[in-house]
Amino acid sequence: MALDMGGEHSLSRRAMRAELLDAETELKLAYAWRDQRDEEALHRLITAYMRLAISMAAKFKRYGAPMNDLIQEAGLGLMKAADKFDPDRGVRFSTYAVWWIKASIQDYVMRNWSMVRTGSTSSQKSLFFNMRRVQARLEREAMANGETLDKHQLRQMIATEVGVPLHDVEMMEGRLAGSDYSLNATQSVEDEGREWIDTLEDDSEQAAETVEHAHDTEQLREWLIASMQQLNERERFIVRERKLREEPRTLESLGNELGLSKERVRQLEAAAFGKMRKSLEAQSKEVRSFLAL
Image 1 (tube, rainbow, N blue to C red):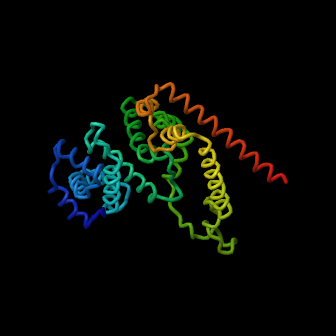
Image 2 (cartoon, rainbow, N blue to C red):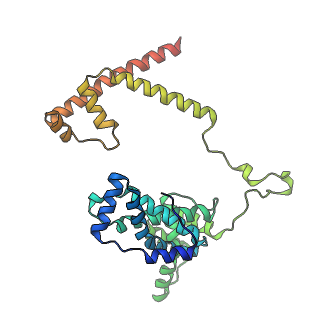
Image 3 (spheres, rainbow, N blue to C red):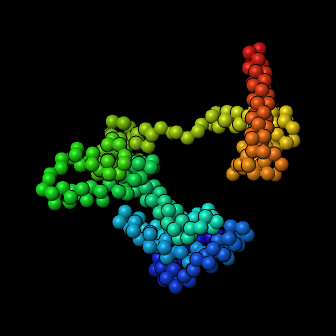
């Protein structure tokens, strides 16, 4: 479903006029989307909570990003939440959606603040959005107590408060204090026009690595298929249900379906893995022998 954002003000007005869902209606819409992929139900769910997304987007205006872009990202986070929401868990959709909306906006802000100065690890993200606030509070508390904090003490207290290493605080402080430079700017007149971007290492996967990875993946797939053929039908079923499903089944549920005890299913699973291991070892030995010729 496309997210029709429109203008900031018109979208805000529509969001404020949207229906307010009670818990029962919200649950019906969530089930309709999850089980039947009912796009009308999804549209009602998204529209009803767009005011929440806009409200959260407004809290990030101080980072200098255009409000329309922040709302767009908030809307994308809201849609991601709707797609992953499980109504069986017994929580309200709005409670669940808050995390996805915030994560989407924060990722956008960090991507656009500066590609060079900020990182994307969890500690860096926590510092980026909390360091100034925590620092201001610590300074106010110290002043109220008649204390004076030097820079090292303040950094150490911030690190403890946010729960990150001191080194991360020092690096983020330097990055936030610096200014942006174009990667296409020349380094110096002596470098014959060499740009800063030329000094960045290309960490993307190279063509040779891509081909090698694809070959290895295909080889492994063939080995696994061959090893699965060494199993009987019941063993293959247990391995598929336990290891190849997106949500693996429990030993107990398989035992109920097969009319076996949980312990017996565990024994059959272990035996199947033993057969597969022997098959894989035999195939790898054949490959090594061939390469040694």
